[in-house]
Image 1 (cartoon, rainbow, N blue to C red):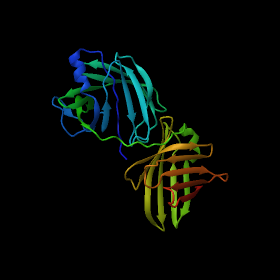
Image 2 (cartoon, one colour):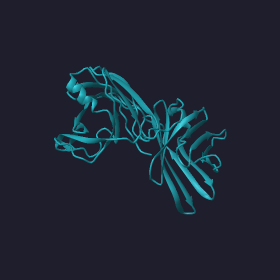
Image 3 (cartoon, rainbow, N blue to C red):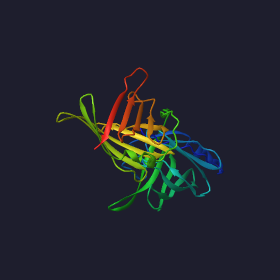
Image 4 (cartoon, one colour):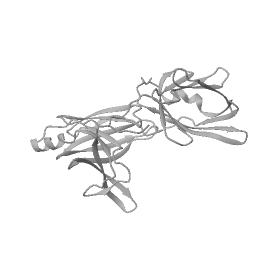
Length: 303
């Protein structure tokens, strides 16, 4: 699953020529390896791999899905520079932050400014980070300032239109906080199919928990997994990276005092992961796929 970043922008109220140029920004855009004509190329896409724009009159409406479009935040900004405080969807394995943003017109383009940012568990930080959106021929260039050892440098990313629509994970996310899942913190051990299985989870901090899993047979390790659970978009996102490979998100669809269900119906296997705290202090993890596929149950005791 890939991370996609989508923006829908509603702009207007300019002279006809500027309005016509801004209307050319409409569409879905993907980052390229091209170098902007007047500045250096950013080492990674300035505004993510993908964004979308729609142009109209009074405001800027920003929709930002996270990696794999597991969930998204929608932000509406007046085009007159009015500051708006809103939740910003966190990066992978990070909880949501709170940002103050604003947008101002700049000729045929516009500036998007992150004025302040409050990360989970941290104090507010004043940023003033500016992203300049401008058309360049049939492309869109997004510029920002990169700070390095030799000082600030203006860099940018060239985006080209695409007709590819991002995939969406279609499940209803249940409201939950990471603190409700704090009982999972610690070291857990169990046995499944002749393998010894361990899971280790940190305590909740900054809106997230970090975990690892390892399966061994005898003295040999047969598989491992990096894991994290982050509080995002009002719910929880469970991310699995089997054997250190690609990341897959599962969204919280059911939360009780003693269990959490995570789902991703678009994944091959698993599609559902259920953690349940037992009366004896142990934890059961049931991993299941499509109807007819055999579910796996891991029973853990605290180490």
